[in-house]
Image 1 (cartoon, rainbow over the protein chains, first blue to last red):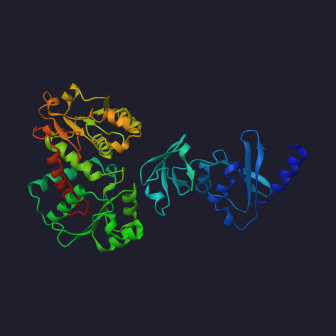
Image 2 (tube, chains in turn yellow, green; image 1 turned 180 degrees about the vertical axis):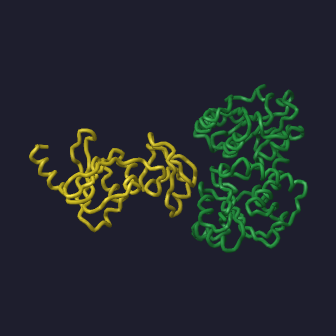
Length: 156
Length: 303
């Protein structure tokens, strides 16, 4: 991508007055991140872009949400699918804080239990996992008590 | 006060186990105690299990309680498509306690969240069957006089056998157990349980055949090797006759040794073992009634 175009693109999706920039999202998970954070219901201005070149990730996505500041509990939900996401908190066009996401101790909803015989895959029930290992990620289902490993993880 | 349920054996502490075992001994001495007089218990068997259901219903009857319920999902509203949630919500309005068995894993935990009354898990798929574990513990305590320093041989399907997993977790709460696992490679004890024992510093040994090692056993816990567990039927044919306990193998076993089996057995214990005084599996099933009386009394604070 030529530098001039890159700059233009950056301008297109950047520059929010106040709000949160979520960077380094894997491109393929952009819409899952939007859904997990419930951004489709947010009334303020949101810009996002994906398939940006990234030295570290190959391809990344970015979301800029005006006038929204996330609580840790809320933003950590995306850690399961955007492990290296970085947050920039913006006030008056300035980055006033940088944050990384952390895998929470409990994962409620979001992930599907890998066990087809689990009650959560057979009836309308919100899944609930205790995180027993963060790296690699191992989630123990509160219901069937089986462990969903990282490579088996599917987002609901 | 928060209601007590029994969903998974690890929900209970060592103190709870001991309290229930003490109550079971009391019920064995005096089985007819009408502590459930005027109470109604739901016995919901979404999946048929004659043995477990009769054991529970006998326990409830001996306590003087009344029973409502069904013995298979075909005769309940489930066959009309009602969700577990709705069945439990409805039944929970009628009764003082729910005993349930269901083929889906985690169903009992979910039912306990939905119900206003206590729930006892009588088996949720391949997951948990805690009342079996407590009756196994009662049988060990009764025959060995203690739950400490037990050398136990678990034989058969140690991969899918939920009874051996729960018993392993429960016995690990007591002093210095020694575990011996005898299973075909395909049905070996899963790594997570071996890791659990290692972390607790508990000794265990793995063997691939039944041999003179069993002479060290205090308890031999037999389980069924089920044909449907094998991907390759040839593998099943190879091992199906390897894990059969015969009377002539017991000659040099310890005098205090007893053989347990959650039943039903197919061919893994030869019928010639039945007359040996070390065969304990039928008495073990009888102990199930006293243990379930004890569990119900503990949960409803009847004693």
